[in-house]
Image (cartoon, rainbow, N blue to C red; front, top):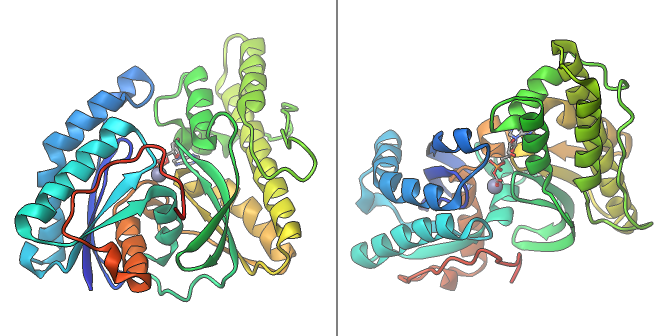
Length: 339
Ligand code: KG4
Ligand code: ZN
């Protein structure tokens, strides 16, 4: 079954064609560069860019898959959560296409799609259930229990900033351009993670929720205290900050694993999961607890992409073919997982 999926929940206009949830025939992603000068994503601007570009991105995805549109078995689209205007561009485009071309359309939850990114270019057995899914991106930080392919239960989420958002804000404060995550990760390689004593916010005993605003403020104060920043200062701030984020993720995963000792694998997804230092720290922790860390096979499956949406749609369809209808899918910026 070949699914052509659309992803427009933030600032990437993405279209992919994936066969049977795993075989990525094409994965095209146009990252909008216009937001850099504003230091963050402007929702209305993102929506306009999606509306202008989705057709060209679709053409490119079909061309690189070597397929004509008629050979597509179903469409899929990110319904939510995300930036409302951005989502609306994608759901409207995909819905009109479905209605005009008489194709079935499958709505997909963005955080569930991030989890399914681990199936891309692999096979469906790569995750052993039950698993814990740590999703960290620019818009979401969530720890979920993944009991079976389409059965995913929320355990904890951020109470303030998302992890990726804090990476971007710290980067901005350091004078590094948006998106800051990859730049922090690059600078941190030359830094000493013990230079700054940054807080690890664990919240109440046993809480699986996250809070990053305290870490953000403390990192800002550390930067302000330095005055003129040398290259080494920047590297040390980045390394200390990255380590604080890693320790926070690990503590929360450890708490969740204690509550659900039957968990076999830990899945780490979302844009922040492209970070090699975080991957390494999480891998050490996971393997020490006798489990396995599963991450997307390529960094472009960590960040927003449409292949993960197609994988998720395939699994949803396998569970319930009724989910695919020739329909108008409305965007839902606050969509709840497993609704
Ligand atoms: O998943 P994603 O593409 O979009 C959302 O769903 O939000 O995640 C984007 C976020 C940005 O905040 C970006 O700075 C962060 O992921 N990111 C990283 C890295 N690559 C992207 N954060 C840390 N290290 C990285 N290597
Ligand atoms: Zn995302």
